[in-house]
Image (cartoon, one colour):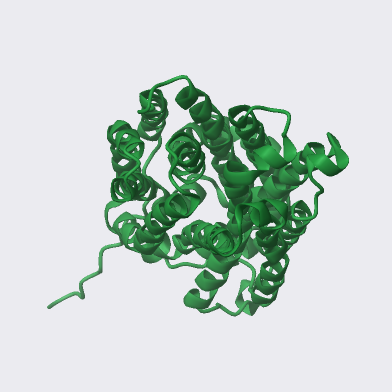
Length: 434
């Protein structure tokens, strides 16, 4: 048995900060690809396609990252359940960072022909593999150190990371778009954000090098021999329910952060700078309110917030696409902001909810597989489906809103079948009198 007493309890603030920075870096890598896919990868890597078909093809390579994420969660979940949460954070960050830098070095179709999109697909797959392991390790290391009464709060910090990564990725793209001509950006400017990932990855590795292993992992005497087999055998229904429940979060987030960029710039003629600014401002608000929403999860429970956020998504999707279709920056911002507030009402507590649903010996695999399968259902398909639906519709893409509403209703049904997991407060024992 491991000696838990020999592990020095780290400062929760320092641990949460390290988890936040790490997820921010990994999601920066993931998001910078999505932005590039929406804005420039189609013409550069699929020049023989029409503009819409080229964007669709670029989104297919974008979707490859989501397909890889469940595989990454299986691979790194095995490592996390067998060897510890901490090694997952190091290896996944290395893999994602290296593959992202490599994307920035891939020659375009004009230089090497069909090998260019093939290389892009492989590297995007590796990105997804690394990110599939990152989330499970980061949230478990935080959740398993946190005191039960504030577990949702501390676990929410890794969930702020995606917002920070998105703003950072798009901020770099926005600065380059403003500083360079369209020709310069298409020729070499789009590569710079990918190269910057190498510096960020090194900084993240340095920050994570001194983190202590999870005390809950060290308490486990009987580690699962093959965690995935146990998860499938004993928790298969739970995995499917969590994947279905999380699909709406991915669908909404990537609809407003990836598909909307392509829709607004290509169909409505909104400038790249204006659209990026609208999305970045909304994501900034989302990231800022995440810990405060998580506090509600500690007070009222995880499941009620998930049900409320899911319901809000179902009600807001049609108004959102109507606001987007106006092409007016303020109205587009309000449409996106409403969607992201509904999204984060669920996802602020997901980082604590999923781990609490699984027993500790298979928690890294179970939580990560469910989380990333939800990404395949919601994140991989949404930009592709939404682009196709918007192309065949009028100015207002009502079909996109209907599709997102349908996903929200599916997820609402799955959340309704999941149990509550918030620890029951232990009442204080009053001293005996008399």
